[in-house]
Amino acid sequence: MICFFNEDTPFTLTGKKWLVKTQIISLAEMENKKPGDLCFIFCSDNFLLEMNKKYLNHDYYTDVITFDYTVDNIISGDIFISVERVHENAHRFGAPFSHELRRVIYHGILHLCGYMDKSDDEQRTMREKEDFYLKTLPSI
Image 1 (cartoon, rainbow, N blue to C red):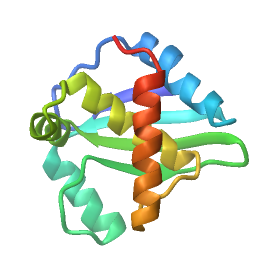
Image 2 (tube, helix red, strand yellow):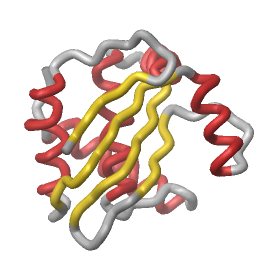
Image 3 (cartoon, rainbow, N blue to C red):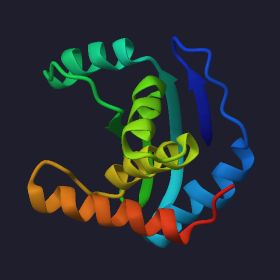
Image 4 (spheres, rainbow, N blue to C red):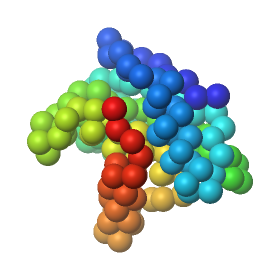
């Protein structure tokens, strides 16, 4: 089951069925994975900052935090996304909000597929994967 929630922001995600069918499921399948229970939770910068502090001992803003419950080839997890940070990053990089939101969603899914981003090499691979899927999967 793939679900979407809001924590403390009035953000409304449009095109959920399209996103699930053409983006999330397609990306998982292209990584030879099957989607299991995936929850996307949209929230504010401050909410995600508190989660970052509490669960990861990081005292900085981020755009996405992924909690991985994957078993074998079935990816499952909770993906928390700061809508404020996505807006800011879109502005900073001169990208449409929808483009940056897809990047962050892909980033979370890629973590569930086993990709990390701690080292420079891992970050480079993660960015290459994000870029690949942004070019390969259809956009609205």
